[in-house]
Image 1: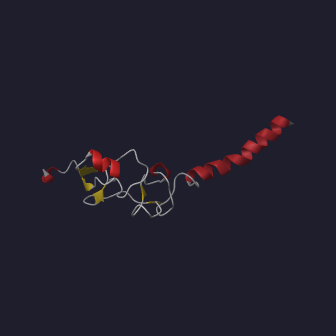
Image 2: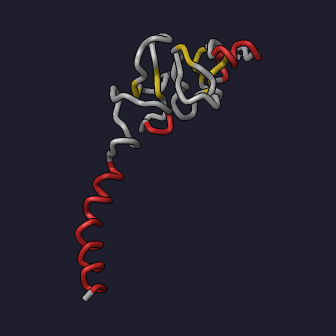
Image 3: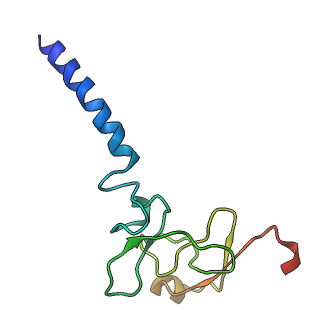
Length: 114
């Protein structure tokens, strides 16, 4: 009887678990939702306007937009570049610590810029 109850509970909870993984309260957050870490966002960018604003999930920077290089910090003032682009920034220790080493997203395969 106990085994049957456990099996029934697992069958009932399985659809709820899969729906939660598609979009949850903590992970897979959409653009505009509040976040604490970039890993929570589908875009992988938890962005804040300034030191006093709340951080929200934001789209990654497109080509020729201002960007931040990928960092160990969970929140960005400028989002990292979209997949396939690189953030051409002057990386310094001070810039890395203060999260102010911004650059421009470029396509490394674009030979006309070299």
